[in-house]
Image (tube, rainbow over all chains, first blue to last red):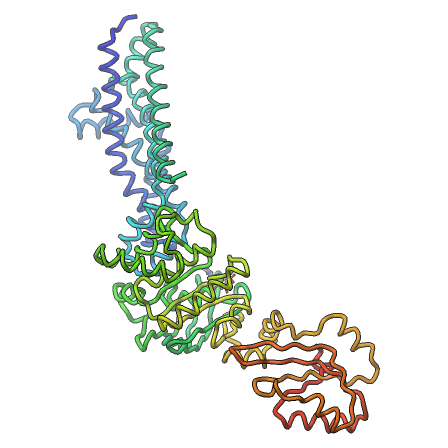
Length: 216
Length: 342
Ligand SMILES: Nc1ncnc2c1ncn2[C@@H]1O[C@H](COP(=O)(O)OP(=O)(O)OP(=O)(O)O)[C@@H](O)[C@H]1O
Ligand SMILES: [Mg+2]
């Protein structure tokens, strides 16, 4: 094995850091975007066809670019925001561009599952649009929103490992530089094992939380 | 009071336009229980949803206590909605919230203080008979209980009007009965005007004071439940009335009638005080006729007895004519069953 345990732990931290920050920022973008995608559609709270079409189009564009290409394509943007295009901090930018629209779609789906009748009841009791979103729509969808964010997080773990390919740091970087390029299979399997445990842990936690919210 | 004046509602436009309501004129007096009945697609939901502007009428005005809703700002509409409770066929409760929270919701939205809210919710839950269910979730309740929560929630803001959109259509007959009783109690104790739409004539008979029949977006008949049930004018209304009044002739009797050659078979309708009158024996004696009761029933409508007899008159034709005339003079309705086609 060409690496020692401190290197692995450092890589693990980098991955957690990347996933954590990109999750935070993509949720900050994806959540409002997902809500807008729901309420601007026809017959909904804040029907606005032009806005819906624009948002929908933008999300589709980002969703159709493979992450590995996105990673390279938005280098100028990354440089502009972070000041550099390599390193862990720099990978957060493409990760957010990747996961933000993805989360928006997932959120949109969750919110669309909420029974229209509930929104109708809210309107009938004189709720404001804000109240409808925050006291009816989101609480009713919460269990499914948690699952959606879990899926997004797992996706981010995978994508952050891919970011290793361009020197982004983290477990993926380790696996590629040592495991793949220098044929250090032990390092490869160790990082793989850590990634698997991480994903399992995330999914289980997400499922448990979602279940707890649904009380079943 | 709710006043519809020339209300029309069209969904969509151009080729896809669907006219759901056309020229609705309807007045619902304060304190009434008013029923609107119609077949599926008649426009019932559209009609009731116009009252709280969940649907905006395309033409015409709707006034609540004299105030024209269509002229109000969004904020004023929301304010007015707090005076109009609504319950739904599928209850539309928040599944993520307890019974307590569901009922408290309208109050919390208005920013009521917590202590007042909990007192009010407790009172409401007692009123609907769910005092012990405050901490349960909707999916732990039966349909009838869910509708009770819906009713408690609708009453939370002390509305003067309650709208019921097929409130009992998802419930079994027994539960329907208990929910209707509760609605009657709401009407009596809180003096709340109730507008309910339904496709079940039984619901109308059970608790409504007045009824309007809706067909293809127009009101084809309206009046007191007693008048409409005892003397329906329009074919559709007659169909609805027959569906529960049992005054259509059973098959076997119909066959019997058709077999009789010189048939003098009449439907005699008694209402109110005339039900107590010994009509048949008097007619039989006075006109020397034999009377054969083929079918009969007596029901009660809005507390007034209402009887319906199918009688075969046997005797001289002239005597029968005189007998019929005499019956009509008592203000009792007689109809020729054969011509009326059962
Ligand atoms: N949002 C809508 N968009 C387009 N058409 C609609 C809409 N809502 C209702 N309609 C149409 O308007 C007509 C009346 O519908 P409405 O829901 O008022 O009938 P209803 O009497 O309540 O029927 P049901 O007993 O089936 O609930 C129907 O032809 C229906 O297809
Ligand atoms: Mg309907």
